[in-house]
Structures are given as structure tokens and as C-alpha cells.
Image 1 (spheres, helix red, strand yellow):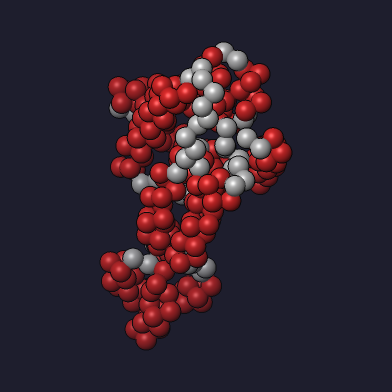
Image 2 (tube, rainbow over the protein chains, first blue to last red; image 1 turned 135 degrees about the horizontal axis):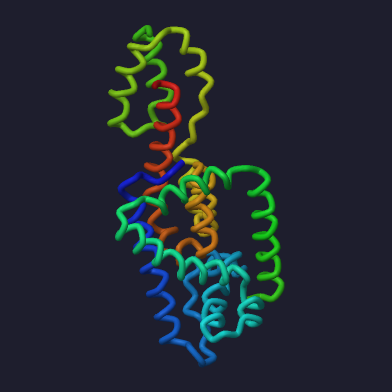
Length: 139
Length: 112
């Protein structure tokens, strides 16, 4: 089911802003040094096991450095997040300038599409694979 | 529909909805045809308490959002480590209400 109409764009904008703020914070704190990420992950703090998306901040930072191999080794999800962080603000600006709701319409359609078994099963398998890899390399 | 039946429905299923929805549901059910009673009985609603438990346990992985049918938000939560933990925390407070509103949407598809 879609998000409520009036909440979609504020939420998207807030997410993008938080994403960039987090990235900037990480660049300031530990770019180029050996200090590890502050570690916000509740799952990792509680269980000691990394979650599927642990390491994606490091991955995005590696992408900014241009080191795609290292980014892949940290966490492949970083590529998706980096892409989202590039596309989403542009899309938000496009929608706010033209007054269309193309992003929301796309989201609603994509969500219906994602509920199909043919898509959600491979997605779960990929996530589980990444998760297993994360646990094995103890990120 | 018989007011006794409607009250029985409200009594057994009231906890699945926001309190301000109940009046509207009652009015609507009273004006409805009796033949829909059986279908109404078979509709499955999501328990807000269960989704809160799931949110507390698996909120970082977005399982709570997947559970109530918000697949898009679930994926968003999963890929961002529960929205950097902030979203996970906020959802502990929002998920029960979100579940009740999902239930209302489910019921509305039957009512209208």
C-alpha cells in the first residue's frame, strides 16, 4: 500500500537529507584514517552479528574515492545507496519544479511490482547472500 | 445489517482499528446488506501488538514494514540498516497506528 499522499515528499526529502548528513559526518570523522564507523546499527550492537547492510557507509565512501573494487568488498548494497543518493535529489527537484508527482507514482507502481514472487524471492536470496558474506568477513 | 451483529463485530475486532474509525465503521456496517456478514467474518486483520513485537525484534531489518504490507518502506529500511537506527526507533512508536490504518484500508475495500 502506498504512503499517504501528503507525507511522501517530506519523507523522501528528509531521508535524502539524513543520508547526506550521515555521509558528510563520516567523511569528516574518518575519511583517510583508520578509525572505524561510529556504529549506529542496533542489530550489530545487540547481537554482535553484522546486519545485511553493515559496511555500506564504508562502501559509499570507497565509491567517492573511486575505489569500486574496495566498495564491492565492503558491501555491494553501497552501490544501490550511492545511486539512490544521486538520483533521488534530482528527481525531487524535478518534481518540485514541474509540480508533477512522478516519483510518488513510480514508487506506488514499483511497490505493487515488488510484491510479485518472481521479484521478491531473488531479492531475498541476494540479501541473504550478502548477509552471509558480511558475517563471514566479520565486517 | 443487524445492530447486534455489528456490535459483535466491533467487540471482537475493535482492537484492530483506531478508535476514531469505529463510529464510521459502525454506521457503514449498519447500512450494509446482511449477505456481506459472512465475508466480513472471514477478513483477516493484522494484530497491532504482533507488529510491535516484530518491530522491536526485527525493526532494523525492516521486517515490521514488510509484515504490514509496506514493501517499499521495508526495503528502504533493510538497505539503510533501519534508517541508521533512527527510523527503527521512530517506528517502535508508529507501527501500531500504521497497522491499524492498514486494517482500515483492508476493511474499506470491503465496505465501499
